[in-house]
Image (cartoon, rainbow, N blue to C red):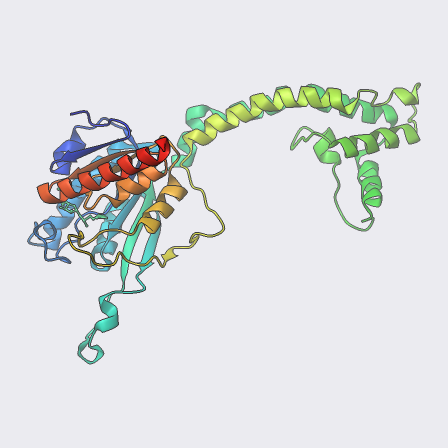
Length: 366
Ligand SMILES: C[S@@+](CC[C@H](N)C(=O)[O-])C[C@H]1O[C@@H](n2cnc3c(N)ncnc32)[C@H](O)[C@@H]1O
């Protein structure tokens, strides 16, 4: 069976040997919820006699994660409050931990505990450890040679336009400080600081004047001819539209390079609605017949996808369970690879994903 086949592939297997067979830099995101170590009564959570044995196994899994995750990839790994600190240290030996997210569950067993018999605070949370490769951003910059290319482009691409504006400024005999002062008066803020001259005439942070600003500059330059000026009307004679066409052409080249660079960076997108801090409050999935004991709520999984994936990315969950990661990944337009060692759980997840894809196909062709 192919390891990846669009839109998704599920494997019924122990994930460790299967992960070992994957090539380096194979996936864009690993979003997964491994066993917690003796939190659940299920056999899959009681495979290790001691926490040390669990940590050794987790270390082996993380070795594979670090190897197969692309340089721009993201890891989200769920952990129990009891083991989260230890798992976080194991991750930090291989990857850079960005957040220790606390998923505070609004409902759950904590609501029904006998407080008088408690000897410590009752855990109401699950933890989600979010990590990337060490030095991920500089890897992207180096891989694309982005910084050097951008600097070179700024120097060469926009230079003819910048030089034209600056030559005209000098021909008209205006100093940058005088232009800034006139600009502030024109804008009705004579006592403020700053201006636009550094952007229009200097090499660093160069920016094209807007049509209104350009018309203002033309008028300004013609209003007081400098010493060297013989034909005032010819100062800044090029129409803005002509400059603008040149600028658009050059900017397109610049933007393409920027896009190539951004594709090499770890994606991270936030909207104004979803949680932007490291405390999340998504409701748990309510019990139903046949529910996986750890089924993750789709809104939470969607939040992770929206923040950290792009359409077409390969998302891996080697501890598949009910398949929530797979559904959210497919909804986000990603390709998905899931691994589950329990035959019954694997079959249930396979049905859930097939039903989802079937329903999506039906509604698309209706
Ligand atoms: C905590 S649950 C995942 C629940 C899942 N996030 C969901 O939303 O339903 C962990 C799952 O990993 C599976 N598992 C445990 N050890 C495994 C292994 N070595 N390889 C593959 N799957 C494994 C278990 O059978 C269990 O279904």
